[in-house]
Image 1 (tube, each protein chain N blue to C red):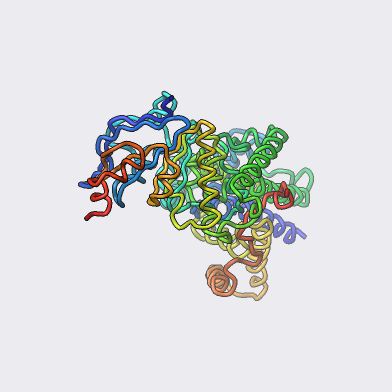
Image 2: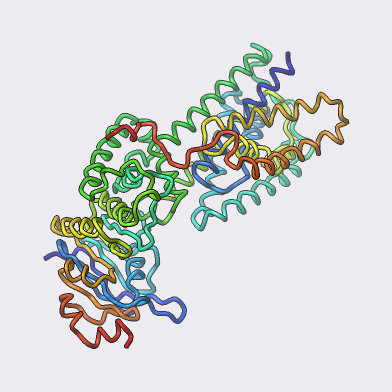
Length: 295
Length: 252
C-alpha cells in the first residue's frame, strides 16, 4: 500500500511540475529547461526552514515557493530584457551552478544530501492524507494553468509567443508578462519541491539536474504542449513506465540508464510519429468567455 | 491646428548608412500626411524611430507636448501612438477578433492583481472591449470574418485587421506603413474610407505609401524623403509635379 501511495504522490508532484512548466514553455513560449532547479529551491528552503529554524511545515513550504518565485525573477529579469534565447542559457547556468554549489555546502547536506527533513501529516494522519493533499494541489495547479491560459492572460501569452514586437506596439508590457509567467510557474515548482521534501524526507543536489529537466520536458512534449490534460497524461505515463520496468528484475546498473534511454527514445518516437503529443493542442486560441458564440 | 507629434533634429545612422538626417516634422490633428520617397529613403525607419523600435542617435520626439524619448515601445503606445506594419505582424494563433481585442491602451486583465482580485471588473471590461472590437470590425468591413484565423482571410483583409487592431488604441497619432501594398478590390475602398474617418475624428495620421493615386486622393499634405532627409513638403500634387523629386523617385 505504501508503494502505491508513494507512486500516487510522485505522479501528483510531476503533474504539478509538468503543468507549471507547460505554462512557461508551452503557453508563454519561454525557452527554459531549468524548471527542476526551482523545485530544488523550494525543497531545500522548506526543508531547512522546518529542520533548522523550526518553522511549521506548511509555512516553510510557502516560503519555499516564495524563494523559488524570487530567484526565478532574478534569473529571468536580466535575460528576458535582452532576448528570449538568453533565458535558456542563463537558466541552465543557474541550474548547474547552484547544484554544484549545493554539493559543497555542508550546512545543507552537501553532495550526500539533506536527511531527516521533518515529516508532515504522515505521522499524525497517515500517508494517504499526504497523497490526498498532493493530488488536490495537482488538481488546483491544472485548474489554475487552464484558468490563466483561457482568460485575458492566455490571449496575451499567445500573441506574445507569435510576435513580441507587434505585441509591445499594442501597449502591452512584454517583459512584465514574461517575467510574471516565469515567476508564477517557478513558484508552483517550488511548492512541489516542499511537498517532495517533507514526504521523502531526503533530498540531494543531483536529483534536480539535467535528467530531471529532460523528464519534465518529455512529460510536456509527449503529453501535449499547450493543453490542459497533456502534462497530466505525460506525467502519469512517464512516471508509471519506469515503475513497470522495475518489475523485470533488472540490476540497478542497467535500470538507471534504461530509464534515461526511454525518455530520450520516447521524445524521438513522438517527434516523428506524433509531434503534437498524445493530446493535440488547437492552433487557434479560444478563450473561455466563448467569444466564438458572440455574434 | 495643433501638433500632435513633433519630431525635432532626429538623426540615426547604422554604420555608414544614414536613415534619418536631421529630420524635423510635425503631425497635426485631423490631417493625413503622406510620406513619399523611393525604397531606402528612410520612411519605415522614421516610423521605427518614432515608435521606439529603434533608438535615435540624437533628436527628440514629443507626443501631445510631452517628450516620449525615454519611453519604451509599449509606453509610447499607451500614450496614444499606434502603428501598422509593412509586413502585417498579425498574431496567427489568434482569431481576427482576438487580434483586435489586444489593442486597447489599457488591456483589461493585464495586471495579475486585477485578474485575481477583481475578476468581475475584468470580465465586465473585457465584454466592453469585445463590443468595441466588434464595432471596429464592422466599421472596417471585417464583421463577417471576426472568428476566422488571420491566415485564412484575403491579404487586403489582413491589412485591415492591422488597421482595426491599431484603432482599438483610440490613438492620438496613427502611423500606417504601406496600407495599400498588395491590396485591391473592396479592401482598397474600405481602407481609404476608414483612414479618412479616423483623421476627421481628430487623429494625426501619417501614411507611408508607394501607391501615388492613393496618397494623392487621401493625404492633405505630402513629405518627400530621400536618403534619410526630408527634401520637400507640400500638397501631394505639388510634390508629384516637381521634376527634381520625380527624378529622385524613379532614379532617372
